[in-house]
Amino acid sequence: MYRTPSLSMIILCILLGLGGCGYNELQVREEGVFKAWADIEANLQRRSDLIPNLVATVKGYAAHEQATLEAVVAARSRASSLQLGPEELSSPAAMEALQAAQGGLTAALSRLMVVVERYPQLKASANFLDLQNQLEGTENRINVARQRYNRAVEIFNSGLRRFPANLTNRYLLQLERKEYFQATPQAGPLPQVNFNGA
Image 1 (cartoon, rainbow, N blue to C red):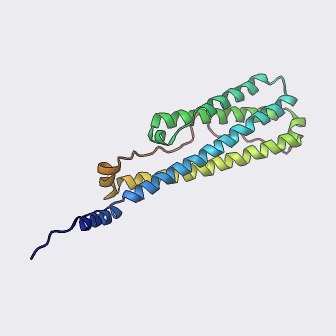
Image 2 (image 1 turned 180 degrees about the vertical axis):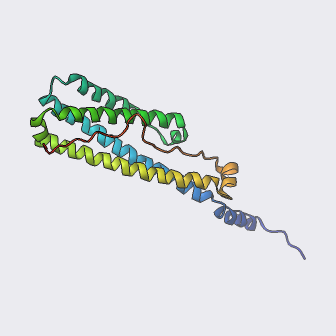
Image 3 (image 1 turned 45 degrees about the vertical axis):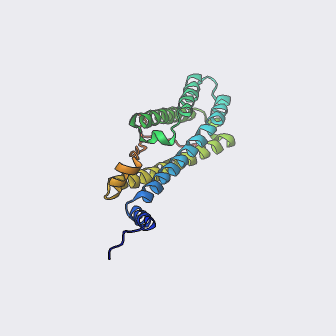
């Protein structure tokens, strides 16, 4: 005699089926992208926080370099005012705008470092050297955080395309692919600056 399955058996089968369809995995991967993005934001904020002290130190030695100092402050303001929330990580336009603002700040900072070469007393200042070391360390942290974010995006985006998770996403989750954080072309390579007085 055939018995119809109970409601609890049907629910159990559905839950077991969801476990193998990528439902939970996609959500965990998306959270990984959000966490990696938060790490980038923390490092960008650290860089932004160092800039006023750096500008003030340079200003004390090179007050007549006002245009360069103002360009750094303006670039910092633009870069700091543009922040992306998790929902904007899927927007190519929003990511491009953020990358352009950060690239402008990087370019302004590199011009400031070229100006510093003209001032031996500034290059020998312990305060400036400490700020320069902190900024260099922060730039390295930003680069590492960018690489980790891009790796998390790669894992997430490829998960969205893989079967059966692609069906789960299409019919249940409807998550959008995330954009990579790339270096902006206009930023270019940073000039090589020797702070050892050589």
